[in-house]
Length: 250
Ligand SMILES: Nc1ncnc2c1ncn2[C@@H]1O[C@H](COP(=O)(O)OP(=O)(O)O)[C@@H](O)[C@H]1O
Ligand SMILES: [Mg+2]
Image 1 (cartoon, rainbow, N blue to C red):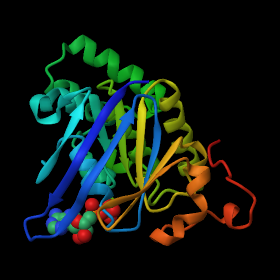
Image 2 (image 1 turned 90 degrees about the horizontal axis):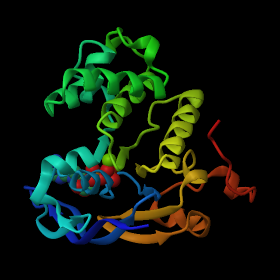
Image 3 (image 1 turned 180 degrees about the vertical axis):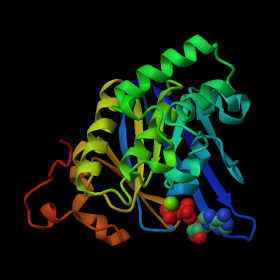
Image 4 (image 1 turned 120 degrees about the vertical axis):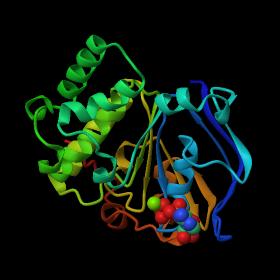
């Protein structure tokens, strides 16, 4: 395991003097599966947007593989992919295939390589049959997979997910969790921001709890599960009933 991301005393103040995050310090090792938990407004999205270079810090710093993030922002965006909360806002292509090809085209990869990588990525995610479909016609679960494909095609080291389970029904959520788990097993570091930990907690190796822009807890999910409600995060039902943690993956 190596230090992939180091965040040091990171603070973000929005233009209207609103604090997004305050004095955040933590690091991420390669291969981790982290839940970034917190109620609405706790600072999760602001932190994720810093980790892939979409926002720059008011103070503090982020090192990616020991280099300051702002030194190499293009490279960082390839290494650290982000799946946004609103899958529709991320879609730009006219077909599923074009959508996945978009990132590599921007990076000016060779056409042959693009086609090969797009095909293998669609296959891995079970989207091959949908290659010619207009993304607007996909289901919620398919759209989220498409957003993941658009990130995965660039071979990232880390994928950041912002509320990936929102608006997904039970089969789509359990399917998505299985996919995310598979990506983690293949060596991709995972960080999932969510206010609803129940669906993902069984698979996470670490949970970071945010509240009011601060990191309040950082530890093993098993040990934090009973105290989440202090921070406005619902304790999973199975845990409340002392039945432990139930796995949502299929
Ligand atoms: N664009 C923005 N302008 C001003 N304040 C913002 C903006 N985005 C988020 N905030 C504020 O920053 C804080 C953290 O928000 P956010 O990172 O979106 O939290 P979360 O993702 O946990 O719901 C909140 O107080 C929110 O109101
Ligand atoms: Mg958010």
